[in-house]
Image (cartoon, rainbow, N blue to C red):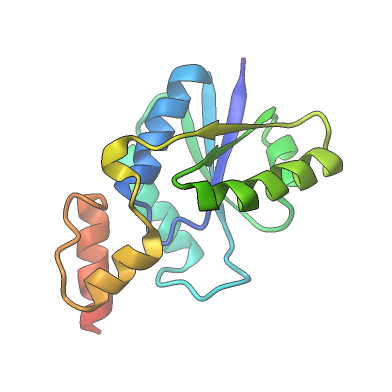
Length: 159
């Protein structure tokens, strides 16, 4: 069984993330969505909220598991009995950063591979930070994030 981990902070999960989950599931038997603690940045939603929002969208998808984690990604991947790290590349500017991460992960755990997916064209511009800014300013983010996320953001920004 080929397993992969799709890591991220998912703050919030977007339709672009969901697209990558569905597409990676086509080539892997099992996909673990690793919801990372965001120690390096402030998040709109806490760790458990981010996990619940993903579960509301893909929690019943066969072969997909959603798990929170802290610490090194490569350690988490091995704990999940996975061989592949799944990453998305939207723009050329993503490549340099993702390339550095992939090389460091390979140095730490040579047995792991990184599998890059290009986004579907309709999601190539999506970015969680931009989506949060649009929602914060009262813009409509329907179709960019799952309905549960639209509602959660509406409530959060109304506070």
